[in-house]
Structure formats: structure tokens, C-alpha cells
Image 1 (tube, helix red, strand yellow):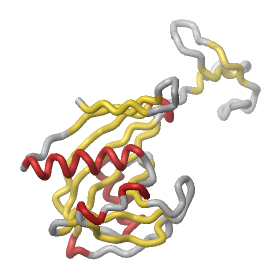
Image 2 (image 1 turned 90 degrees about the vertical axis):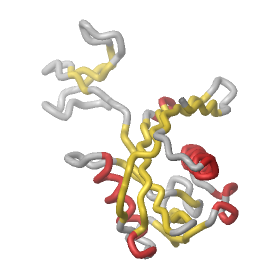
Image 3 (image 1 turned 180 degrees about the vertical axis):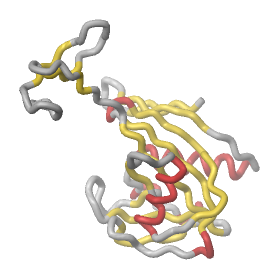
Length: 187
């Protein structure tokens, strides 16, 4: 950030009085510009014994598979965001949505809120951000072609719970280690 979005003056990166973290602060009007994590809302669309995945038509990770998910919009709940993203990416309408897991990913300043929901009438078709959509059984999941570690972990939890006959809400974190490996912890 180089300029204040309130008055247009230059900003500097420093710790404001009474704070403990550096922030962008306007050198003219003293507005503090906070940068906070982004929330990604998404869903595991279920139909019979399969789940819906989308092949990404956009970067990052173009051509790889993911669950429908994306950045929340202002003025919506996480549930509304997950439903909207499912519709935008796969024209998927969902019933009985419920929170399934939340992952904090601090090295990219993101928090994932993933829901489960029943795919209405089993219908889906690609939206503008998807090359294709497809229902997969667990054995058919393209595990080596999943776009993001958080999606792989969400699906692994989902199938572990399904085999155990339970459905819990999971809280976890994905931390990048100094050796660039990811440490995944689920509570």
C-alpha cells in the first residue's frame, strides 16, 4: 500500500500508538489501514454416495479439482457465501447445509469455513470459474489433482467421519514450517 484510500496522501508502515503490530498509517490524516485475514466459504455438495468437485477454470491452480468455495462478500453470512459459491461455480443448489470444518491458514492470511449440503436433485453444471463439474465416489476422487491442501484435508476428514458413522464439526490449522512443509493439525 502506498497511498491512503481516505485522502490520497502517502502512507508509512509503522506500529500505531497502543498497538503491537505494524500497520499502514496515513502520513496526513493518520487513518490506520488494517489488513485482516480473508474468509473463504465453501461446501461439500453431497448426492447419494458421491460428492461434487469442480475443475478450476481460473488461477491459481487452473485445471485442478476443488470443492466449490471462494471469498465471502460483504453483507453475507458464511452460510450464504458457501451457497453462493456453490451456485456460481457449479450451478449447485443445496439443501440442509451445516458447518463441517474451519481451517486457519495464517501464512496466506485465510480462514476456510466449509459446510456440508445435499445437492438438490443431483444437478450441477459448470459455472464461469469451472471447466467441468463431476460427482465422485471416494474411490474416484482425483487425490493427486486436488488444487489446495485444505481441500485434501477437508475431504480426508469427511471420509474418515463417514466411515466412522459420525459427523463432527472440525477446527484445524495449516501452518507452513521453516522447511516449507505444511503442518496440519485438527482439534
